[in-house]
Image 1 (cartoon, rainbow, N blue to C red):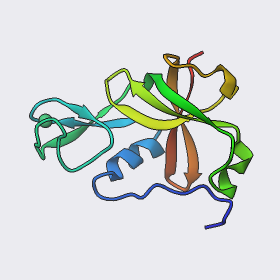
Image 2: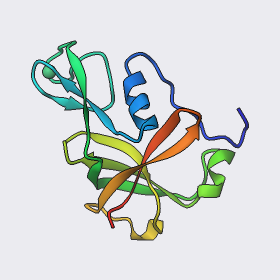
Image 3: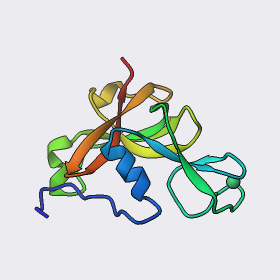
Image 4: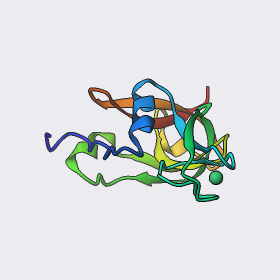
Length: 136
Ligand SMILES: [Zn+2]
């Protein structure tokens, strides 16, 4: 991997369906078959009841900015072209929160409570990372 390449997500059997969904442009959440709890990140147990009976539900991809920060000093050479960029916690309409970037706008206009929707950044063949952009 080139020093200028952004890192790829570590993919394991618990997260493979999530990343397969991203590669298809679908944001998937784990859903507990016993209690119905929806969770992110993917893991082997339901965080609410401990059940191992988990399947997948597609998120509508819409959420709001729960909090965010503007990164002005890149963590590595791969991110230097992006500065300044936004790292945010996005609360999905379905409930789970995930950490991502807000792209497609001036970082100065990002605000807590702002409605956003998912988009996917292709990082490698069959690997796409969910990002968020302001709702039109
Ligand atoms: Zn459960």
